[in-house]
Length: 482
Image (cartoon, rainbow, N blue to C red; front, side, top):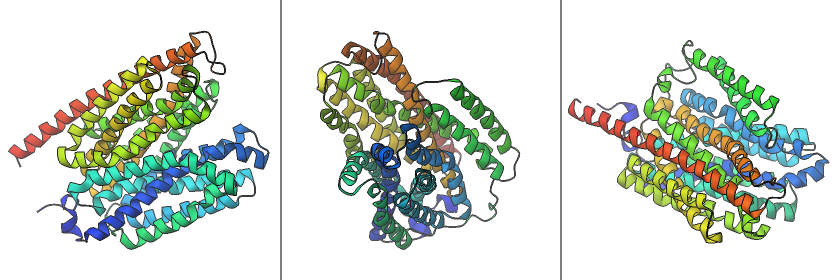
């Protein structure tokens, strides 16, 4: 007889197609809100500087507080969901996110706004971690890829919509509106989740929570994130010290996981080569994708001479393609399998980044490759998420979903720092700085950065091929010796 973790949705809790659609609607709206909150605040920084008479170094913590809360806590909240149940924790996360958004919109001082953003980030961490984990509970197994594609599309839409929606809200209603907009949307997400998400099953005997491991992991991730973000391009002694602290705390975390009764991450996870490969690929691809956001504006404005409006229009191509390609990517996963789709996606990514490294043919030389890159990214992200989450036992879905989101966030943070530094170094070879960047310097920086990106994607492609072969080998063994 199949175990509970292996049963299909119909065996555990038969539901109508209408209920499944509404459950996916609640997960999609949660994904949209958490990604929208990441991007919408950035456009409000100039208004916040004026409203609170503060420096950029201070108001940037409105963005950093949210990102740090998500990065440091997303694995821990996933583990809590595995222990106490995903539905109640997701409802609590949506409620916290909505309440904290109201506090952000009403904050009388900058420091209270930053504190409220950190609380909003905790709610966002719950929403990001549990939407992926809930897919296996909310949809039949043969529709997992389509559901993952839908969530990927909503994440891309939230990221894309943030700057434009934020600009309109600030222009019409002031900066507080970019946070208060979450109130009606959050209430709707909570109502849908309350009504349509399945209760799931509790996991008896797994009630312990690893407080020491949680603290060590949070310290590791916070130190690393700060090392990569502080200094705005300069990497000084403080950044080095934070990296050392992150390394030491990370080692202590791994040691602690082997010595506690109920570890945050089961030690077997460290030996799961398929999961490790998926997390590594996720980090690599996120690092590469961040390069398109960090490097492309300099290339388009300095090398191609585009004005700000045109730069924004051209840059919107990537997120738009990502959103449009996510749903078809999910259907391809359902039809052809996650491993095949993942390899095709990474192959597309390699072709696109190589084309970007040529930096030729004007606007078309950027737009056509970026379409290929973002299509490949949608294929990879959807298939990788599907491959990982469909192979995880029910009582580990929360923490593994948290690890997936964590690897992506760390990739974005690393990409912003490393790819930005590579671009700056390569451009400096032409004898200019980023403040006054000559066209030849911008083109050179673009070429070098995406040559590195191509190499990284090829590494991920090699990992995907070996991981697919290993998975196929294990499947053959199981088939011959059931």
